[in-house]
Image (cartoon, rainbow, N blue to C red):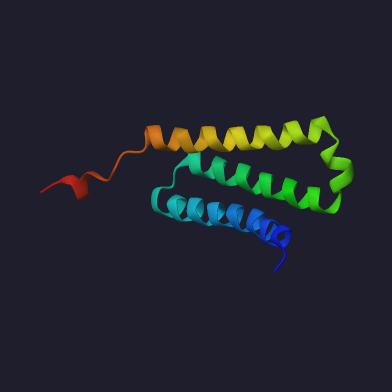
Length: 95
């Protein structure tokens, strides 16, 4: 199998795994941070799909690339926000 095809497949699998992981965490915690993180990861996946169909035009667009990077930054901020504010269930820690 061609290496470029493997890289392309991996570039779609990773966001889908992240979306799945965030969705599982969201179902367990209900955190608004994870709702936002899920939305931003979905937007980044849409950017990747858009780039696939309009690659030559979008790769040369500073606005598109800045938007894609902004979505990634906001995703990271949301995951960090969840990590900072998350508190384990008190029942699990009690003897």
